Every structure is written in structure tokens, then in C-alpha cells.
Image 1: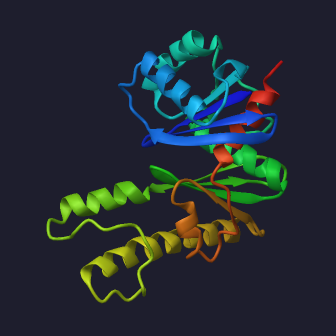
Image 2: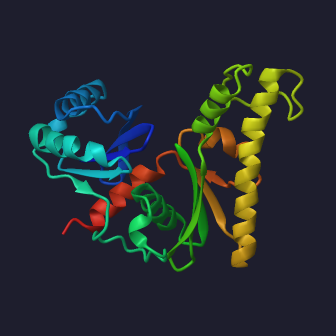
Length: 255
């Protein structure tokens, strides 16, 4: 079995694959202070909860945008799984040309998402990832990573709003009855839900116009399903796109 770990700034998503089948998945808080033993014990508990044998793990693939967790994960892999971790980074075989001014600047998660989406659709597309940052990544019909946009994430935007506007209450990120809010809570929810959907639609439409072609729009991330309902452009949601990309990259670099 293959253990895939996607370490984001806010959450870490983990998944277990047997061949191409995702057997189990979990989402935990990302903590830079988590030790290798804490990682190991947590994972063993998750395996036991899901009825999986941790001894059956034959590989561990990691995508991380938090460099400080790497050492703890490496030690955990060796001590608890007897595995050397495969990290997504410069020098690995991706099978996707990265046409960025400096390819090393592109976050591992963005490349992983782009590879998984293109492998799935085999066409020009945009991947929208609703994570700590909202990222839009563009792949050509030839499977080239072209670049994209990075926007403030939904959760950090909400936190900034509530912290800097003392009179505004904290609200749940859910669709309000109308875009025209009749009270403060619904007004904030309308701005967040419809505002982010409009932002994504606007950027996708501008990219498509600039490229002069039709682009398939796929979304991933914790809040992707909620936003996709209000988006004109998003055609498909895959909450496990990054895990799938990690599996693909691990297989490509197996030798």
C-alpha cells in the first residue's frame, strides 16, 4: 500500500492507496511542532481505526509547502514504517514541462494537482484549489504547466475580516438565502460565498480569453464543493486530486 501525505499550511490530508484505489483518507491540522513520534502514533491510530495494516505500507509520498515538517516526517517514516519518504520537489520525474520563469518557485501542491488533473482529462484545463491560498493553475493541451494565479484563501480572508472589523460577527461559510443580505450575517455570507465564486469565474474567463481556447475547470480543496455550486465555470470537483497526483508521481519515479 502507498501512503500519500499532502501537507498544507492549514490542513494535512492523508490517503492510503492499494494500486489506484483510495482505501481511506483523513484530514488533520498541520502542526509545525508535531514530533516524529507524534506523527507515527497518530498514523498508527488512523490505520487501526480504518482497519488497515500499517505493516503493509510499501511507500510514502509527500507533498509539502511547510518545510519545517520535513525532518519529523522523514524520521517518522524510518522509525514507524521502515520507509524512505518520496518528497515532491526539484529533480523528480514529473512528465510535465513547467513553463514558469523559475520552475523551482512553483509549490509542490500546484504541480501535483496539475499532473493529476491532466492525467484524468488529457486536455487544456484550469485547476482551482481552495486551500489556505486559492490557486488557479493552467495546463496546456500538450500537458505543459503554464502558470496561474494565487489569491487569498477563503479562511484567511474570513479571519482577517473578523479581526479587523470589531463589530462584525464570525459567521459560518454557508450559502445565504440571497445575494442581497437582509441582515449582517447573511450580508457577510453573501460577500464570502458569491464573492469568491465570482472571483474564480472572472479569473477563469480572463485566462480562457487570453489563451483563446476552451479550458476545462476542475476544483479541489476543502471548500471546493460549496463554491462549485455557485460558480459558472467549475465543471467538476475532485476532493482527492492532490492525493491522486502524489500516487501518479510516486509511480513515475519508482525506478
